[in-house]
Image 1 (cartoon, rainbow, N blue to C red):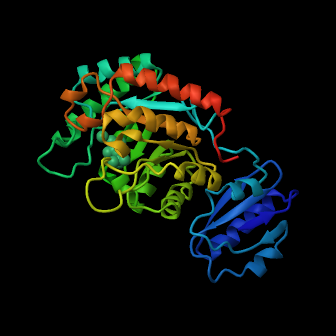
Image 2 (image 1 turned 30 degrees about the horizontal axis):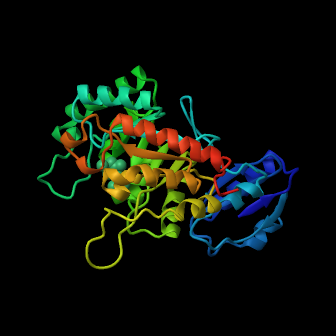
Image 3 (image 1 turned 45 degrees about the vertical axis):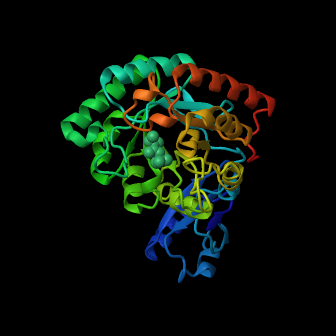
Length: 355
Ligand code: PEP
Ligand code: MN
């Protein structure tokens, strides 16, 4: 990490970048209000920091031996950025801002009519962003795989419905991609690209998505530690895409016997991660619980621990849903939940527990 003097010139900064590149590394240039901080991306061993420390315009050069650094609040602070949280702007929605953001919609897009009905319902319930899966990660090849599995034309048609629903009800839209071959197509239609829990570790996918320069909804793998999750998030920030929304969606339950929930919602991860990084964290109570009777309370708990928002599965007829029927709630229940979460957010004074 190279900290430039506050009066360093552009020529001096460019010189440092060229020197970094000589060592086969890349530079992340963070231009703050007071000074510029340059992060080295790549293997720093073998970099003569003494040499960098005496270059014109350099205040300090040192090695940072952590698996991630570009996403830390410390890194942003060094460049003079005192803001607690990065605010990710998607249309008129601000994720990480003063108000919690609610992302809602069906687990899977099933038909145009189903999507439009649910979009209207969640909009009326107070949701800001519409979700809907077109490429579904499924355990069994015999289950409904999402409309995207039928072929590229079918996937594109479903994506046009997402776009239309988002435009009609004035909500940005998010859908999951499962592989690199889907990235170009999906990026054409949606505002936010979701990388699901199962793909958290796919660094080639992370890089390919980050290069689209669109906001990314990035979910923690159910077996991943916090440090691992943040280390992989750094791959996207290293591609100069800082619009990453982190999502805690439950980790594997412990012990033998019945666990009663699909996963264990790691509530403490929310304030812990938000202390570590400037990226906003949201929670997914739906996949964590796997059952609709817990969604209200877990959502309230997520907001209470300082989450910047929620992603929740909503269906106008949950019993009939083709995927994740047990955990989807109705638009009316979604409205109750949003109302309660707003009250809780107010009660805790809007604290995001990362300040
Ligand atoms: C989803 O949000 O549709 C989903 C499959 O979630 P996760 O990746 O967290 O399992
Ligand atoms: Mn689901």
